[in-house]
Amino acid sequence: MNSVFAALPTTVFETMSRLAREHDAVNLGQGFPDDPGPLDVREKAAEAVVNGWNQYPPMMGAPELRRAVAAHYRDWQGLDLDPENEVMVTSGATEAIAGALFALIEPGDEVVLFQPLYDAYLPLVQRAGGVARLVRLVPPGWRITEEALAQAFSPRTRLVLFNNPHNPTGRVFDSDELELLARFCQRSGAVLVSDEVWEHVVFDGLVHRSVLSLPGMRERAVKIGSAGKIFGMTGWKVGFVCAAPELMRVLSKAHQFLTFTTPPSLQQAVAYGLGKDPGWFDAMRAGLQRSRDRLAAGLADLGFSVLPSAGTYFLNVDLAPLDARLRDEAFCRLLVERHGVAAIPVSAFYAEQPVVSVIRFCFAKTDATLDRALERLAGFFAAREAGLATLHAYK
Ligand SMILES: Cc1ncc(COP(=O)(O)O)c(C=O)c1O
Image (cartoon, rainbow, N blue to C red; front, side, top):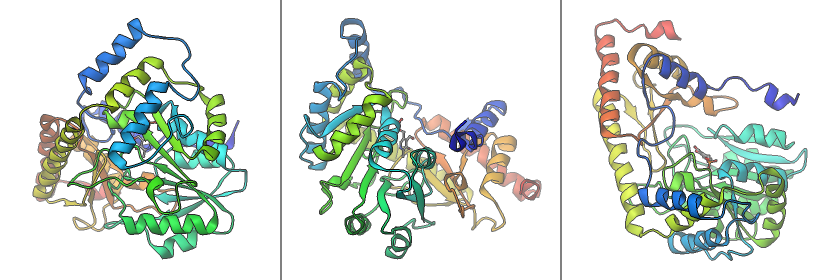
């Protein structure tokens, strides 16, 4: 058996989902929306299954979709991508990430990663033989600093696996941080692989900036996107990889023997969806921003210390101001078991030196779901007032 996968424990995501089911909890742990996704896009997929081509599509992706991806990123992010040589379709961002690691590193190469990190990253880096060098981001700012990068980069750094907008912190890194990272990549000769699946889910008028637009990075960056996140249909697993032709040639070799293709009907539907009126994307963001604000206001009213969320489906609360002794994992167990609300402890996103005072809630839910969660969370504060909360028993 392979030691990387054999050693992986049951994830906290699985544990929390099981507890949520057992306790009939409102599940704000898992990151998927209540909304079923745009009807016209789903109808396109259905139509394509019934009347379209259901055999292997081209390995690089349906030409319509590759053209739609290039046009979409031109219109939304000012990128100039050649759909023939610089765009590839994958089975979700996860396949794109695995493929990029398999294609771009050799055993022993160092890979810089940012904690808290998306759960798939580290096992995939290790399975590809990479040696992880971790940059630790901390609340409340979760900022990337020159000092932290200087510690993580070395002459052996070959790749940086980056995520922006960032899950679980909800941060959208600013231009100073992005340009700093680009300078480090250039200095060490590393390729920057950027997981930008949350690119459309940004709030307060923010504009997503892709790594491909950073000075000096057009030839040494790989941009990864996901239709599942753009359209709020996380089960679709249609991803996009964009990179200069020299990188793409190697990336496509890994993809060829991982999944080779992605269901053609979904590719057709996503090609249609990416061309939707800009108003649809603006309304999608506005709706999620409203949900973010509803949950943030409700949590703050209860007495939680809410950290800012500039993007993604997630917002975090810092438990330290409530009680410096609280630990995120124990607190999440208390919430789900005693009060019927599931959240995710952010320490689960650290491989070492975890931050243990922050918990993550998903706000991509109906108002009724968010309100029900808030009512139940009020039960925690009432019990605490009455001295009934057995918080410390959960440590
Ligand atoms: C940062 C990040 N990357 C990748 C993914 C997975 O994307 P996909 O479903 O397209 O594989 C997620 C899903 O939550 C994510 O948050």
